[in-house]
Image 1 (cartoon, rainbow, N blue to C red):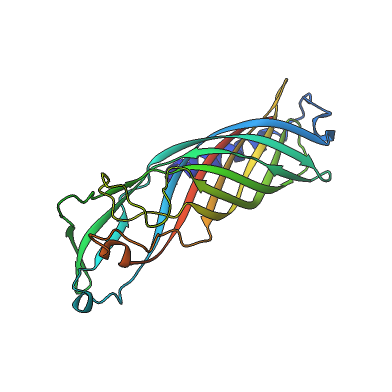
Image 2 (spheres, rainbow, N blue to C red; image 1 turned 120 degrees about the vertical axis):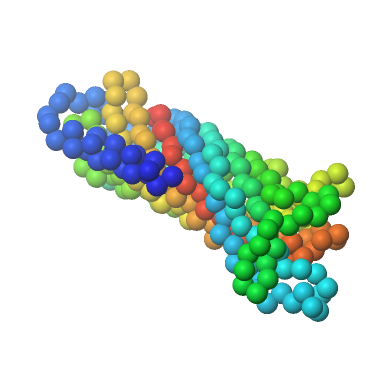
Amino acid sequence: MRKSILIISLLLLTLGASGQVERPRNLTAFDLKRIHFGFTVGVNSMDVGFTRNYDYQSEISGREFRYADLSHPLPGFQVSIVSDLRLSDNWNLRFLPGISFGSREIWFFEYSNGVVGEPVELPNVDNPVPLGPAFLDFPLHFKYRSERVNNYRPYLVGGLNFRFDMSSKKPGFYDSESNEYIKFKRGDLYLEFGFGVDNYLRYFKFAPELKLAVGLMNIIDSEGRAEHPDFAESIESARSFILMLNFHFE
């Protein structure tokens, strides 16, 4: 993942450097539009940060502490509609409703005296637990653009995004045929920020954009499954992180 970020950053810097040479301009009136639309396709990688409940007392509850961790980030994809409102020469307000799919696998390990042991093995328990969200996205972003150089215009973007997981059931509800013993809440609010470069082509504007989303809410459903509540009780909180590489066509 770090290597991919480095390659993308170098590509964006190369585009900016190549813009220093004078070239004929495309779409010269594009930035004068009050409102314009487009669409976005992209890929993502979803991560989870856990705060573990180390004060959980197995002697009192009669249950074991379970150490939760993400196996490794898995790729996902997303699509959205772009609605862009020009506020000034450098500022735009953007609404990009869409849908994003991702994949997360949560492992549970034995834990004793500060040492993480082997993966938990229990009958009828999925380990790792597959949690593949299907989000409805409702991002509202401010976009700050630098001055245009030829057919390139670097920018910064930031704002909030409310995501609703369509694949998640209501809190505390576990399907009788499911072997999952934890679940994430349906809704979360994200702080998003990133950067990109507007490329003015002959007929449309194309912009690669790298963006990070940081979840602001605790997404763990504390009401675990009745058969093994120790899985949920061993986690104090969980916060979501999403790294996105988007391609805007406007």
